[in-house]
Image (cartoon, rainbow, N blue to C red; front, top):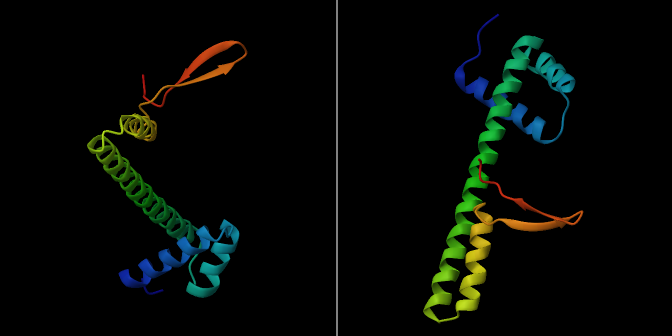
Length: 122
């Protein structure tokens, strides 16, 4: 059996990533790999792992981009609010920004006790 070239392997991994995103089960992907590319279960599992990693990296980049965009918008709104001496809005924007960054401690009343929730590690 001839080894696949790098471009072919990368295209197969992209195809499997699309299948994962579309919710296809492992068994279906392995069958697809066997029927279309004549590869066994072990090699298909390697492709699936690489495809999962590709999807995770893509999602992480998207989240980081969206986070940076949101921070920039809040910072612009905060700056404009201060320039207009609208300190109430500036304070509100600052609170939203710190919440987005995980710095704001939110008080929640539950069972008569106040608990503090914060995403900052101890």
